[in-house]
Length: 344
Ligand SMILES: NC(=O)C1=CN([C@@H]2O[C@H](COP(=O)(O)OP(=O)(O)OC[C@H]3O[C@@H](n4cnc5c(N)ncnc54)[C@H](OP(=O)(O)O)[C@@H]3O)[C@@H](O)[C@H]2O)C=CC1
Ligand SMILES: CC(C)(CO)C(=O)C(=O)O
Image 1: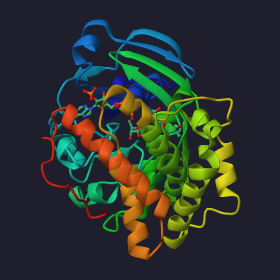
Image 2: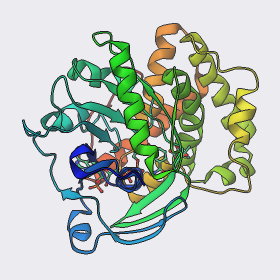
Image 3: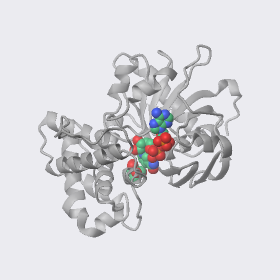
Image 4: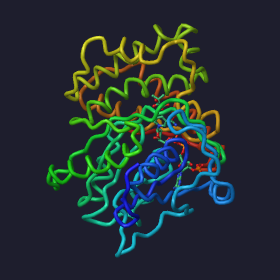
């Protein structure tokens, strides 16, 4: 572990301590190079009293673990010691929340770097619009980690591509320095989690092939990734859906290469049954990230004139499920009129 004193540690705020946020906090704290304040919500009381109980494929068993600070509200940044990084690990549900507004009190202009460790495509532009003087890093994660009331099962290694999402008002050398500094802090526990890449949008489209198809279709059918393939979905829906997503990426200027569909399907062997994060949300009765995982991709398709019949229907089904979930949680009332979006 790095031998740094408290003063030289990066001050990091992690917003949302579910599976991804808790494991990000562990990686950063265990590196010895960061001091984490984690913002918790439903698990706050439990973690304050007992800490997290974590079973991690990367870090082993941690009982009663807590980051340096645990709070239940996004803190206002102090003038003397602003946050160096605000790491966002909440789900993105634009139907009911605005991430930029949530993190705003903790972001110091010209100083804080915002790191989005979330799924989705083109989730960065609204953050850059809201914080024009702050660097934005983007890291679509391949972790498997799920949290329930302070208990975390982390069974797939914490790995992600990390890149800067260029803000035209900032110098690329400044953004690059932030990218390298954050990656070094995250990787400081000597587990190589963050892999720096030059063009993060390419990697986000690659991941959209998996998330936009498996996450959505598993959430709709409530079948895990292996069950959906074994039930005939691989050739009727999964592969054709991935072909559509690759066509959107290509129209956006990102050629994902030959055999990308085979590669993405083979990336998760059929022997490995697991529930993608969106299916876990449906299991828990939580709203799903339909807009950032699929809606944003379809917005690009519309703009570029790409036909996406399978993904259009996937979106329509998922929006119905989303309405049920939002009503059940009291976020919206049962719609009386037919709800529409720019895509329906
Ligand atoms: N889990 C996984 O294995 C993977 C997840 N991802 C992506 O990572 C991101 C995080 O996913 P995941 O960890 O599964 O999400 P979870 O739902 O497990 O955790 C999100 C956490 O954020 C909290 N939260 C929500 N809103 C706020 C708020 N306003 N203030 C403070 N806390 C808040 C939630 O609290 P509460 O409990 O009160 O709702 C919850 O604890 C998502 O974009 C997901 O798609 C990517 C790859 C794998
Ligand atoms: C690809 C996967 C399954 C995690 O690695 C994911 O992104 C998710 O569960 O949302």
